[in-house]
Amino acid sequence: MLNVLKYNPLFITLFLLSNILNIYIINKNIIKLFEIKEAKEFRTFIILSITSITSMIFIPFEISYLLNLIIQIYLYKKILKLNFEQLCISISMIFAVKTFSQIFLPIFENQILGIFIVELIINLVIFAIIKYRKLKLNISENLNEKSKKILILIATISLISIYCAEIKIINDINKMPIYIFCIFEIMITLYLIFFAKTIIEMLKENDARIKIENLEGSNKRLQENYDNVRAFKHDFNNIMQGFGGLILAKDLEGLNKMYKSIINECQEINDKQSINEDIINNPAILNLINNKIKLAEQNDIKIKLEVYLDLNSLKISTYDLCRILGILIDNAIEASIGCDEKIITIKFLKDKFNNRSLIVIENPYKNYLIDIKKIYEKGFSSKKDKISHGLGLWKIKQILKKNKNIQIYTSRDKLFKQQLEIY
Image 1 (cartoon, one colour):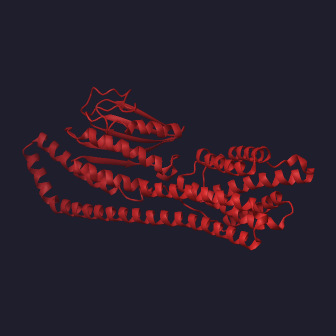
Image 2: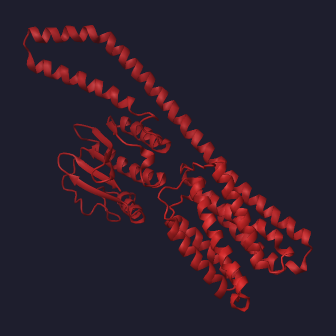
Image 3: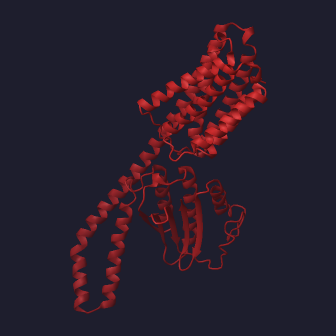
């Protein structure tokens, strides 16, 4: 362990100051780089400062190095709410700075203090670059589960390998040539930079793929809308003649039916026009809704969409929102099959009075005996096959436990209603 108390007051002051400043600057770099809104950075800063200093004073270096990294990952995930991709890039950046700083170990008489000062200088340079060049990384959460699992495996193996190698090298630094030590540290630094760059490229490629899929879907809907408008215009004269005949015959019931048919057709055209990237401005949500609409159409179910808010302003990760929406819409589609009126309504609303965002999903249903108090229990399902069902709504509850600012309410009357409230 590092017995700080045996050093003079100047060393202790510089040691504590450099360590605290390092943590502060690293947090600032991450918050600015990812444009984290309403980040609880002071809370993160205090916890990291206390744990870092305490562990380095009272715990052996080999353990404190790993312990601080684990605590850092946990706090960034829980408090700063970094998604998996942001977390990988952040830890790679922090590790790269630490590793590169080790190159200067041999030149310092007091190695611990020297390394902290070098780290601080490098982090300040990174801060200046991010601030004055206005660098931003808009990292989405669009990676599929397979890609995410591969990244988790690679990241875990890499960090464990680098940690073990670093500890071994630092302990044996006096037994090896300085140039070998420097080459090794530079190689690890370059690997970490390459790893972070690979994640960014994967995300860009994934975003581009989703954007292409959305554009293809949008082009198809535009063509359908164009054809519908042309057909409606072509039939307008016939429709007017039909109206005229019903008026002359004073057939009010016939007029009412024909009017409703025209209104429904116009509404259908408007609904399709609302499914575009200008209104649904989150590509992951747009892609999800596109796919759910296709699934609904296969079962002769219509989805009416109303969007009155900026989806990117919602205080929930895109990953969690996609999971929740996917489960709720799938359930709505399943419940609507076999109903007489197969229309699902999805609304994205802003409740300014209560300062919250609402996502409301309403659908017809046939099982009027379902107990809405039990539907979130694990394994609960109205279907006979309980092995492959009964986990969706339970999973939503698990997600909400991690997001204290989100609640869900279920009600039923003529329609089954799920209301997600995001504060």
